[in-house]
Length: 66
Image (cartoon, one colour):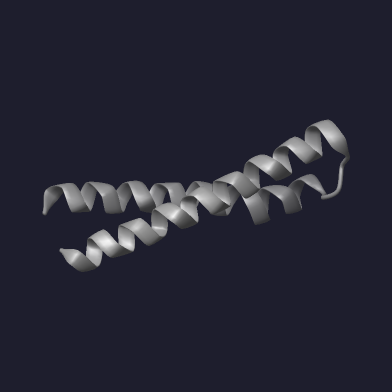
């Protein structure tokens, strides 16, 4: 179990960083200037953010079952 707890903490930090990056890019794209193409923006920032959130929620549930 200690391995899962340490891994979960690391993934939570990564989730926070990726989430803040996605929010920042979203705000810049919508309110400041259009830097990236929409498909590039989705594939590079939003898809990884959603996938990491799903993985962290999976780890959290797995930790709860142990």
